[in-house]
Every structure is written in C-alpha cells, then in structure tokens.
Image: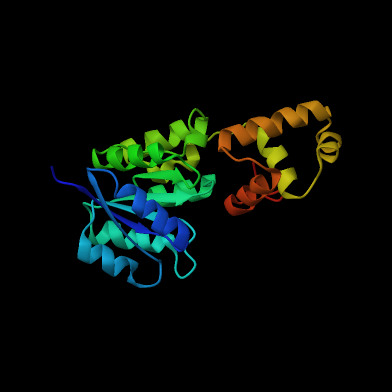
Length: 222
C-alpha cells in the first residue's frame, strides 16, 4: 500500500520531532519535517509530498507566502495549516491561498490523522472550534463553490450591529454604547454576542481589529 507522504514545516523543535515520530508510527503515513528557515519550499519541491502540515506562525517567513508558493508550484500537494486558534481573518486569507484545512496544535493524534487522511481524499477541514458557527458554514460553502472572494460579503450584520461594532472599534464601553444609541445595556451585550457569533471571533479586541481592517469604523458609512 502506498504511503501518504507528509512534510511538516514547524519552527518548534519539540513539536516538529514529536509529531513526525508519531505520524511515522502509522502504517499508511511517512512523515519528514523541517523548520521554516528558507529550505521549507525547496524541500517540498524535492519531496513532492501529498500533504504539507504548516505552522501558521513561522518566524523566518510568511506562512501565507509558503502556501501560495506550494499551491502554485505543487498543485497536487494539499496544505493543512496548524495554529493554536486561528481567527477569522486568518481563515479567510489562507482559504484564499488554497489551503485544504486547519488543525489546532492542541488537537489529538486522532484529529491529526483524520485531517491528513481526509484532505488526501479531497475533503476540506475547518477548525473544530468554528464548527457549527455561521462563519464555518459560509467558509465551507465558499471553499466548495470556489467563491472565497465573496466570503466576507456573505456575513451580514444589521444596521444596529454595524453601529455597535463601530462603537467597539472606537473603544467605547457597553455603557457608553447604550447611552449613545439610546438602548439598554443588556441589548448592547446581546448585539455584541451576536456579532461575535456571526464573525466567529472571541473578544472585543478581535472585533475592534476586524472593524478597522474592514473599514467599519464610526466614520464609515453603514
């Protein structure tokens, strides 16, 4: 039986050696590993792996650039990005670049094995923490239909939610937002919760960063 060839690109030596050793215990997988220092893409070109497991936060170069190079030069190689907790913007950018999936670094060995075997079969794997959220369904649909560029447009917020998001971006507290919009504080909290759910984000800081990135600030038209 032909083995699945896996290249692990990871800066952390303990993770790199540990994951490689565990993968090589599987009968259907043969794994090699390397750091992100320059030779990652060259090693991928030489080995032509079925799957590249790529650390999202490489210190020496942009992981996104590595994905783009691999997908351009090795279209038959699937790329799976590893991170502690990828945020929405990262998911969007890496999906655009052509990754086949995401896996959390605290995932179980079974999760790693399932992801590797699934992407080889053509499946797209989203982070488990995003499963079930509106955003996960939108990402999955965009990946399957090839309409990634319209991904953000598919996340719709009400006019009030946009106002609350813009106020968060301006650094206002829930109390200040309630006073400014003439609504109850619990209503503000409800809007914040709904926005977080829609965008698959987790903190007000992530919301503020998203708003500034997308130009959804107090000075922007809604």
